[in-house]
Image (cartoon, rainbow, N blue to C red; front, side, top):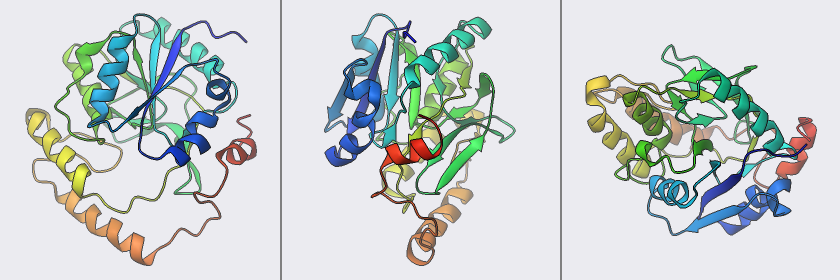
Amino acid sequence: MTVAFPFVVVAPVNDDETLSQCLAASPDLSSGRIPLRVFRDARSATGVIADAVGAVTEGYVVYAHQDVYLPRGFFAALTARLAALDRLDPRWAVAGAIGRDAALVTHGTVWSTDRGRVVGGRITGPAAVECLDECLLIMRAGDLSLIDLGVPGFHLYGVDLVQMGRLQGRRSYALPLQIVHHAKPISSLGGGYARAHRYMRLKWRARLPMTTLITPLERVPWKLWKMRVGARLRTRFSPPRHGYGQETDPRRIARELRYE
């Protein structure tokens, strides 16, 4: 099936081994059929997205984590999903593989290696959401109006992009897509995550509370503090009990799931 829309895939990279094992091994990218731009030594995810979105004039920018594997046929499926989304809502802001709505219902699914299973809720068409997981985001070329370069680091920018769209009266959506997120277990919600969480709480304080896929944004971040302790305890005392790890080939996972 021919891909009707032009795509460019972009990714911030700090681990070339993970990149070559996952994103760069995706069939449409390894063949050169879909271009892949990597950004090393990037200071923030929004900086990477702004650079990529501003550099192309047509089609779509697919922002992906370096540890995401896109199975064979992914871009043909994405073409169909975006055509359906355009028919439903021509002014959509951002799309992704998995997100959550204001009622805390998760829409869309991804395989998550750290959990050893597919997570989320299955959907058959576009589902409006209040936040999107950053493992995979789709934006229109040239649409810089959603991007806040002040968002620090590499966390919670999926929430920010969706909310910036809402300020313009635009909705964002999870789409039914099949991807393998070869993620490592979360060991800390401090550091860069805590800084991004604080930035978002201050920026969106008039709209709080606000849902995310990990810790909600609240005026007093009780749940963040509680989950930071939980992440440390799980890392120390509760190792994963499934048979998947970073040594597992994500292509094998895709075959087991019949994604390709």
